[in-house]
Length: 248
Ligand code: HPA
Image (cartoon, rainbow, N blue to C red):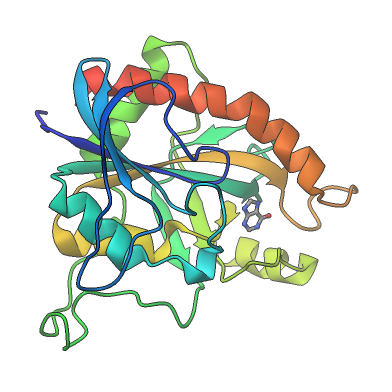
């Protein structure tokens, strides 16, 4: 693989990059609006990277209000040739407890009302793209190999169910999601993943499980508990990104 520049989209708990040496910050306005944050350009592990904070910095934009189209256009404009997204998620699958790191391979879109295509007949003419495998296989393999390099346990399967939020789910909703095959629940993989596909940019995700999904533990889901897992887990996510960059 030889991607010249890697886009990294940081989610909750990863609003700025500490690893790379940042050389420039690009404030970009796109024809489809303003992105959540500036694009930070730099190098990490000798690799050119472009970092975008999905929810802004400081963290402010809720999942359903993110201008995903502007974010993706800004990354394309600054030269991203592949994208690694980081997502904090809830765990549904029994093996995906708090702290687990998952490289998902599928998704189910349960969001509504979001601007979820570039091919809307206004910005670009209608086109129906293939989305059979929403996450890029080559990037996934590189992430799994990088995890092995640093002896980090990651799970190499997972269906992310993407909900509208910002509220968390009911137990019945999670039961329903489990029945339709979801292993994880998050709020931001869609439309991000499909917009990357529409632009032809390979895209994969690192999911950090920050809480058991609703009804999957006796305890109430609190932001304090989530923060604790984020504090512990994002360091590992950073290590994984640092390990994968030389492979891309
Ligand atoms: N549900 C949806 N999104 C999430 C969750 C959750 O339980 N945890 C983190 N993001």
